Length: 71
Image 1 (spheres, rainbow, N blue to C red):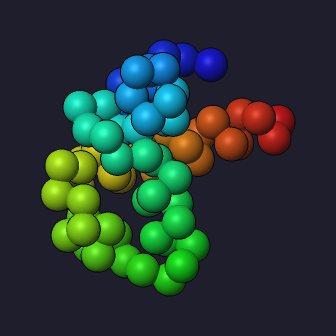
Image 2: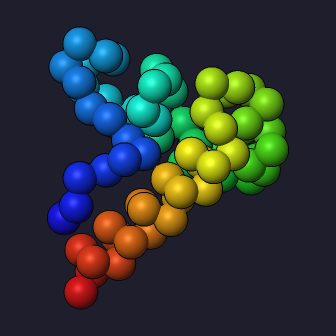
């Protein structure tokens, strides 16, 4: 598993929850939005500290990690 350049986990930030680097926005928030039927645009509007590039790269990285875990 490679070191993430998109996500960060630090016990001092939200108790170690995985967040987008440079923000306090958990990756789980993006997953919850998408699972709830909201668009990426709505997520980005509600969490302006996350860039479009971060969100897309984060989704791609999460997909890769899940694919590797399933193999």
